[in-house]
Amino acid sequence: MKRNVYILLLLYLSLMLSSAASAQSVARLSVDALPENIVQLEIFTDSTRQLTVSQIKVLYNRHRFRPLPGGRLLANYTTASYWLHLSLPATRGRGLYLEIDNPRINQVNFFQLVGTEIVRQVSTGDSLPFGSRRFSHYNWVFPLLPDAQLPSDVFVQLAKHGEILNAPVRVWLPDAFEQYSHQRYLRWGVLAGITLIILLLNGVVWAATADPLYGWFMAVIALHTFHLGAASGLSFQYLWPTHPIINDWYPQTLSAWFIVLAQVQFMQRFIGQTGQNSRVFRWVNGFKYLIIGATLFTVLLLVFRAVPSFYFRWLVGLTLLFSLLVIPLAIVSLYERRHRAEPIIRFYGAITAVHFLTLTVFFTNIVFTRAGHPLLTFTNEALVVISFLVDLLVLSLGVLYFGFANYRRQNETLLTALHRSEQEQSQRIIDALEMERNRIAEDLYDDVGAMLSTAIGYVSSTLRKPEIRERFPMLGEARSLLDRAVENLRTVSHNLMPKNFAQLGLTKSLAETVDKVSQNSTVQFDYVVVGQERRFDAATEVQLFRIASELINDIVKNSTATQATLQLIFNHQTLNLIAEDNGPRTPIYNNLTSKVNFIQGTLDVDASPTGVTTIIEIPYQ
Image 1 (spheres, rainbow, N blue to C red):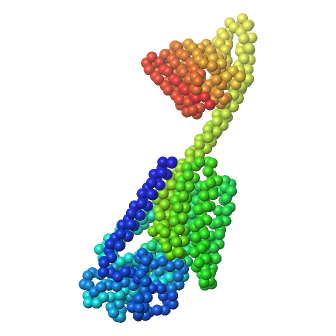
Image 2 (tube, rainbow, N blue to C red; image 1 turned 30 degrees about the vertical axis):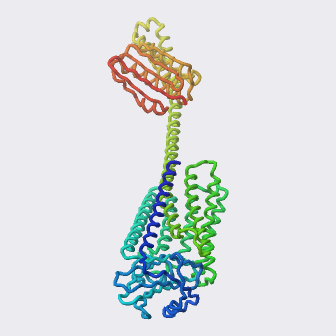
Image 3 (cartoon, rainbow, N blue to C red; image 1 turned 90 degrees about the vertical axis):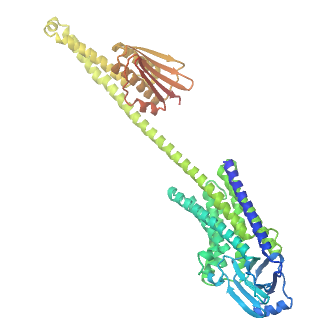
């Protein structure tokens, strides 16, 4: 199990490293794509949100714009408008592409001016239908077409309503942008395909096993997919292009809460946390009820349009709190199971460690974004992708592995219980048969035997009179037949159940049986006992006696043997019952195999022209 976990983690790390390398190559590509004669990106903050593009042009001419550091716009809970500017020289080239890498910006207005004349204008935003973008891309992309005679200026107005605005800005050469765009769409397509396959696979397993664990895992993946699709802009492009209301912050925030809720519920199902085996179970449930309550409260505010002005910041803080609390709750839930050293606990602990690392980077980004100086190059969207990949690739394998392992254990438990029930049922049947055999043997001894003995007494008294003996000679033959009947009755009764079997035990009971058979048959039996006798339980000894009796009867009735040997060999771990005879024939047994199997023994029969050897091996209980 440990080896499997290490392999999964190595695959995950290799995937993350390849993604990082790809991101670095894209970054280098975007820098190399900037022509040398493009003026540096500049920015101006419009706190009034009332300035027009003509007024912004005047402010630009007055040098009120400042350079955009690092090509990234960072603003915390802003209510201002931000104007980007770049200059295009007069040229007959194919132009460039301007990309603003944040698909969730409320208002985006693009202007291209030649002198003071607006030659191209696009008004769009995530609150408008996707078709308003003019250029079909999940990011904000604007083709920059230079004028052949005069230089032109490009102004882009960006605005978010009291939210965090984090938007890298890139300028691309056409070929570089096409290559970059195709690679990004291809990666997103592969990820979407893998997600769909995993969802379908878990759906099939869920339908086959009816285990809610797979349903909760699918809920985690589906909610992650919705949140990631909205954050990337792909869902707006392909799923709800005419319903921009879904892009609003509230649906995305509630989906983040539902992700936490589904993850907590999934964790409880995955590690088997219940109120009986966990002291923190009620705290985890309280956390789930807190999320449900906050969701209902938010929905009511939205329905009655009573959302206060400060509520957005409260939502952000509550989302961060929920995301933060889920980690310690998982750690505590795993810690109280540490003594059991279960593989599933170690596996989920590794998953939790990766989520904790991702969340740490996320909060580091939040803190330094507020300060205006990002410490790490990982964006929050990239962290969401990483967390999603962990659940999609690593956790899904763990769910399938441990789910099937648990399903196999349940089947084995059911099969064991079924086998035990069958054994108990068989034992009850055998007990009932033995009771009936004992009753029949006692009836034969007490009733039929007594009557035959009385009849023999009457015949013997009659035969003492000479005149009757001479007149009725058939009475002598009747007396002989009655004697033989009594002897046969004793043999049958003994075979059914020897008297005092429980006290005598298997060895002595078989000795009596062999002596009686030797006296009344043409087969000369030898009886051999090797080793120190070990007693079995009563039911097993009765079954062994039945097996030995069947072997003896088969030799007497079906063989032409003159010599036979019955051996009991008490080994260290098993008892060997061996029957040998010199009759050249095929033995005819009656359910001997099932009798041997019932006491978990093995049967080996060797028939040859020189005789038959039957070896039965029974393990000690």
